[in-house]
Image (cartoon, rainbow, N blue to C red; front, side):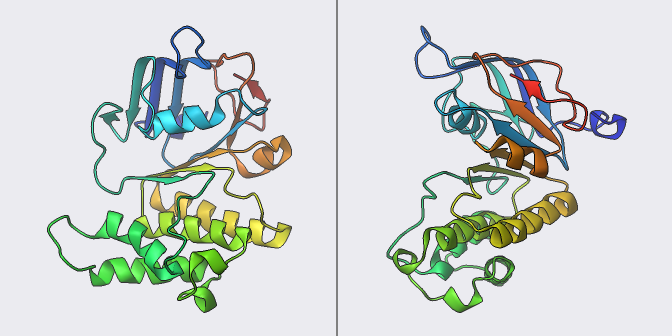
Length: 240
């Protein structure tokens, strides 16, 4: 952890957190974990160890069994400010009968339309169009989701989140189903967004070599524990 990062307030702070669905058989125990502005953090490990549950807990979709989870300065028990957290679930959550533009506008409206506005703002439309273009989907803008390939749908879900302009992006296997060239393009766009916005990216990734290539830090879940001393990926791999 660089001194520059450690002097900033973390976007995500976990303290004495236990995650899971059953108190008698928790999935992961996390004594301490901070994620700072500008960071890309990968969570790796085999299937079924709690990677997605950890992501959903940080997103406020699952309550921790115990401990403190803070995101963007707010407790997980509070409602996060509109638009500050973007989440790309593994199953994407797209409206399959609706167009690419409609789906991406859902993200843009979350980040750039006030609750009292009846119609989408010009700012929301601008961010939606820019996000669609950044994912190379200009020619698919009116295409319904159900007619797109799996990889194209993943790019739509990524564009939807980018159009929201969140401080924190959480992505669950968002690079799967992409060929090498498209994967590199998507990762470049998202990385550039994180660096320029001062936000952060947390990505669940089962492929450890891919996780190492994309992240500043990699956390590997193993035996339900988290090492509180998070080390930069260039130094060593950290087992949780």
